Image: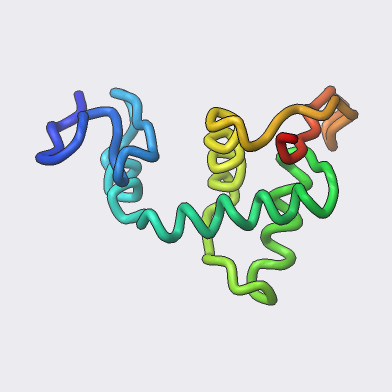
Length: 116
């Protein structure tokens, strides 16, 4: 059960940008509250920058982000955060599927691009 947050809906923490589920551990709730809107914005801008350079899968986005983060001044983050920010960009209509390709495990994966 999610505890009530004093200023926002129970399932939306970190200024309404991160959705948490009832089964998420308390550590996830604390992490969501710690994310600033500025950090999320920088991560999303970085993803859009990477996709403007070339279309990429989530795996490729994550690798590129971590390879370039220090040089480009992007915030340190968990590896799974890149996929989550890309999903939020998709939901906002800023990123769209460009096709599929074989991923590192041999399965078809979505290739993402910046929305026209």
